[in-house]
Picture 1 (cartoon, rainbow, N blue to C red):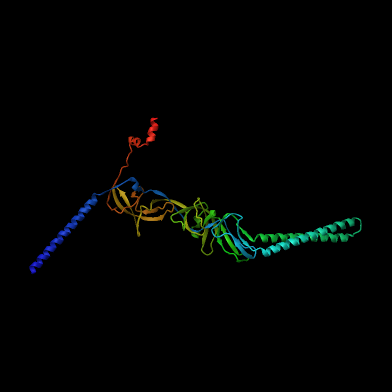
Picture 2 (tube, one colour):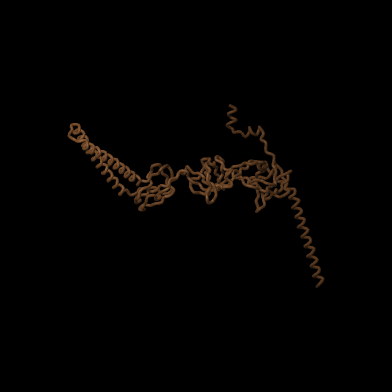
Amino acid sequence: MLRKTLLAIAVATALAGCNKSDEEAKKKEAAAKAANITLQVASEDTLVVQSTGLASGPVITGSIQPERRADLRAEVSAIVLQVLKENGEPVKKGDVILRLDETSIRDNVNSAEEAARASQQSLDQTQRMLERQTTLRSSGMVSSQALEDMELRRNTAQSELAAAKSRLVTARQQLGRTVVRAPFDGIVSERKVSSGDTAQVGKELVKVIDPASMRFEGTVSADKIGVVKVGQPVLFRVNGYPGQNFAGTVKRVDPAANAVTRQVEVLVSFAGPSQPRVAGLYAEGRVESQTSAALTVPQSSLVQAGDINYVWRVKNGVMSKAMLGIGTRDERTGNWQVLSGLAAGDTIMRVPGSNFKDGLKVAFIAPKVVKPAQAVASAPAATVADKKE
């Protein structure tokens, strides 16, 4: 029994040794095949690392706001009768947005008109009396004192008429303020009242903005404001427009820093026709105050795995992994600054592949040259017919 057990163990050991030898042989065979594999690539599959201009500068954060905006407030105390425009509706200059109750103000206008009419009649009467007194004075039938008293009454009537006309103008202006109109072409951005609300003097009724006058109202840290100048380019992104960069120009730098945050406001105008049409969106970018030469690689070539960054470099027909130290990202192009790991003139793969390995041989495919005969043969039949004619 013991002899059979020892024999079985010996057989199993021999089989395990054979299997191990077979696995090692297969691994060596696979390594040999991999060593003989050559990756065929075209020139457009690679790129040469070169030194380019890298823009840098202070970070600017803020929001998109319209330059032309109006907060329309009540100038008279009245009840809101009708709201004609809703949020988001376009308006033209002079369009009626809402109406206020004009009943009491209309009564004031009528009263002022009657007072002005009475003052005019009083003036006309005193003027006629003064003319008669003047005629009688020339014949000696009226004393000088009586004539002076009549002139004083005429002057008083003139003053009362001027005051009555002034009150009438004021009443009519108040009547006109019961109709709220758009001050310019734009869009109603916020309606604050509804029909039936009581509008006191100074109460905000509606906001109107001009979407064509958007600008970036941002802030820059005070310790970086020294390098920000009017006219410098700004590249920024806007929340709600993913993957899209907007270009602008510094229009104005506030001469005073905020007393609480110690940040300085910077106004940026859009440089092109492309701009958001919605106000209040968060934006963040960078003022391109400085430009320096640096090696850069595109995002498509860079492999990022945690804190490890590398590209696949091709040198002397062999591919190898090049570990990189990267810096800032150029928002204009999306390229990353290379601090270490590559040199100008190095060739890297434009897009990394899953089958790339260290030591993989690389062979460049020569571009096909089209012969003149082939070019003529491939020409359209109509062109050849034209030549024969």
